[in-house]
Length: 172
Image (cartoon, rainbow, N blue to C red; front, side, top):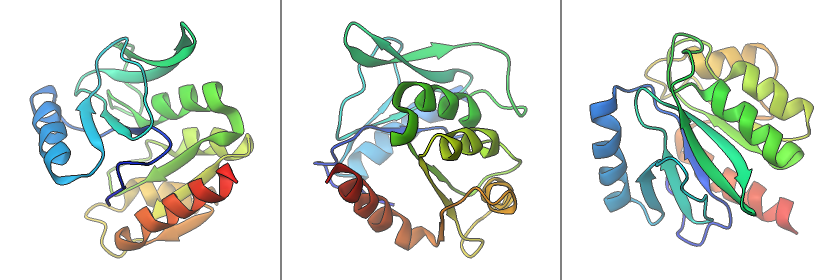
């Protein structure tokens, strides 16, 4: 899933990986993607056209401080057996941007992200889930779909264009 470098919003990524793998993942994605991809650093300002990966072993929360949305890394207890957890990130995004949040839930084990997607949807945000075709592990998107929280269920190759189209529509 690739986005252009002029994406007018920041992207936040929770990947259930150990700490030693998230920085190399960010570096690899940064070389492969037009967006700037960084491993999240505590206090960093969220900028449009950049993607931030939660470090393994740390939750990523968004906070409004000093007139900007900033990244906050915590060692709060794991959620859904995970740290970082998508639900943790999604809740904070919903608190900051209410109905202007878009969640994309891709392949993964368990139900992480489902409760956060419920909050996002209830507040007027939009939820995408990856279709079973192409999922290595269908747990996370399936949980979102089974709870009827996904507005759109798409294969991986269709997700990025749909996300960009949705962002454009919401900004007009």
